[in-house]
Image (cartoon, rainbow, N blue to C red; front, side, top):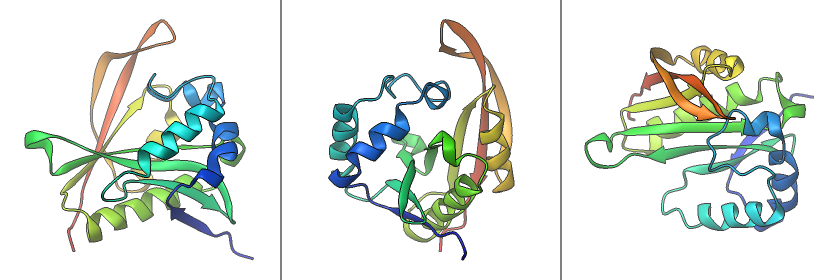
Length: 170
């Protein structure tokens, strides 16, 4: 049987699973500090409520064989950057290295090309997050630079790797 990966809107029924998956320090270490740790049921409820208000869906749960395993999203940019969109993602640790993230990124690229008025997708990756850099490159993203000591996480400075992909609108 072939594995099935689906991107879908999050719902309140995802609250407990989302909280359990996200409450992981190894995930948090690769995320901005706005992503809480510990990640509580209330954090999951608030996140789902926030993303359910999106006019155009930009945040999706990642289902792997009918089980929520992570989240992937686009973040719109303001002003002169309005044709660029940032991609962000995380997968529950037990689902790492299964190709789920790569397939999910490919689906988001297709969505951007066919449904969103953007010409550029970009990602910012902490230097120690080698897996995310590899999966972005696998999906055609190009590393455009490194911002030295741009991130302050866990009481340390870290370099930030910047990736981009120009998309074809459909």
